[in-house]
Every structure is written in structure tokens, then in C-alpha cells.
Amino acid sequence: MNKRCLTTGGKLWQQGHLKSALCSYRMAGLVEKGGELYEAVWDPVYADDRATALETVEALRAIYASRDNFTYRGPGRKYFLSGIAECSDCHEPSPANPEGSTCDSDPLSCGQQHKTFTRKTINGTPYYVCYQCSRGRSAKNLDAFVTGHVLRLLNSSAFRAALSDRAQQEQSHRPNFAGQIAALRARQQEAKAQMKNLASYPGLDPALLAQAITSFDTEIARLQREAGAVASTGLLDRLAGISEADWEELDVAIRSEALKMLYRVIVYRTAKRGPGFDASAIKMVRNKGPRSLAQLPPA
Image (cartoon, rainbow, N blue to C red; front, side):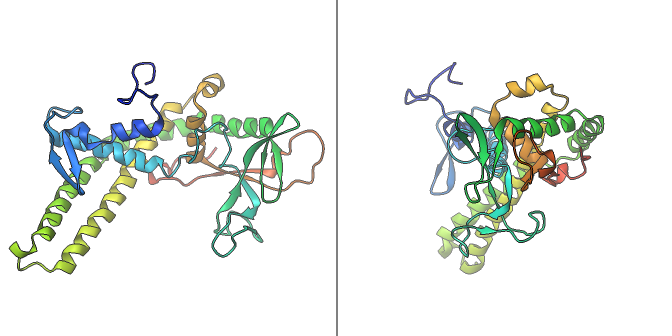
């Protein structure tokens, strides 16, 4: 994007800027004020009519809402497993344990969020380290081990066949999530307008109307999750059959997101000392993920 143009402020595009631009109701020829949409003086960008353009905006918002569940938060991602690989022994800080706590059971069954590893260079060698218990693993070896598992799965004939079958089923049965969201927003705006002019609607119960307005937000959020989950899984379709060389050429954020859709990576304590890599201390657990991934075969 930055090779083509800069922002209206003359600055380089950032991910947040692009997301805001793509998901703006302005792209549908609309302006938002006080939570309500009004027709703008300009034509929509995404389609000839505002209704179709609005569906596109809602579809993009749903995709980004889903990605927020996967995406690394903070500065631009630099390392494949930072914030993803989990320490088997340490829990993240919580209100009950502000300093974090030790897991007394297995991370697969304890039900608490586990501390993730951070990349750190020690004496010139990169490691992934748990800052709570100081456990570390060679970044080079752990990256290679996890990458190998992901590529084997993406290139497995059973996995690729399941992806193809799922794509065909979704194509014929996929609901129009964006249309449903746009319709709900229109109904929500009608309800808000009635709330502002209760005197004109003496038969309406204000409490029930307020509850209805809130319920629209809940249903819209649910549809966004459904739509975004389906759209996000398209990433796996594009990566199926990818070579190791092409995989390494991908932006690290894309590789990390694909990993999170497929696996949970847990690093256990090892008794091995010295050079080498103890693969038995790394557990790759297939994520259940969104419903559209639940039936895909394991590695």
C-alpha cells in the first residue's frame, strides 16, 4: 500500500489505518453520527448502491472482528512463536494471583490461561523464554520443529481433501452474514429512533425497547464471529500445499496466525541438558478452532 500512496495526512500506512479505512461506513457512502448512519454527499466506493456497499463494509468488519481473536497485540509481530508457545508450568497473572501461579495439573485440563514465551537474545543466541519460571528453548530449534508440524499438516493429502470438501459445502450453504448484519443494524437504528421519540409511540415500553436495542448488539456480535470465522479459514485454503521456501517468504504475522488456527503449542519441562533439542518436551495440540475447522483431520 505504501508503494502506491500515503495517508491523507502524508504518513505511511499502518495496519490500524488500513483497517479503519476499509471498514469505514464512508466506503458505503454513509456517515456515522451518534451511532446512527446517514447518507453522505458522495457515492459509495464498494458498489453502485449503498445497500450492497454496506454489506461489504459489514463483511469486512466481521473479518477483522474475528482476526482480533487470533492476532498478536502490540507492536508489529517480529517472531513466529512469541505470545503463542505456552509454558506448561506457569499461569498468567489474574486478579486472584497478580504475580501468576504454578499449574498443579496438565495445561490441557486446568482451564486457566498459561504464560506464553517471549523471544530474547542471550549471549548472541536467540531463545524463547518464560519470564515467570525462566524456562528457555532455542528459538531456531523450536521454530523449525513447529514449522515442520504445520507444513506436514498443510501438505497432507487428507487435510487438503477435507479443506476442499469443506469449501464446496460452505459455498453452497454459506449464509449471507453481511446482509443479516446490515438488516439488524437498520432495525437497531429504527429502535433507537423510537427511543428518542417515545412521545410519538405511547404504546412502547421504554425498558423493553432499551433491552431490544442491547439485544441487537449481541446478535450482531454473534453474526460477526460466525462470518469472520468462515472468512478467516480461507487463509488455510490459500496455504494448503505450500512449500517450505514459500512459507518462509510469508510475513511472520501470517505464519503465526495460521499456526494459531491449527495448533496450540505447549512447552514442557525437560531433563535433557546440553546441546540438542528434546522434541518430546513439545506438545502440538490441534485446535478445535471455529466450527468450519472442527472436522478437518489431524496431522
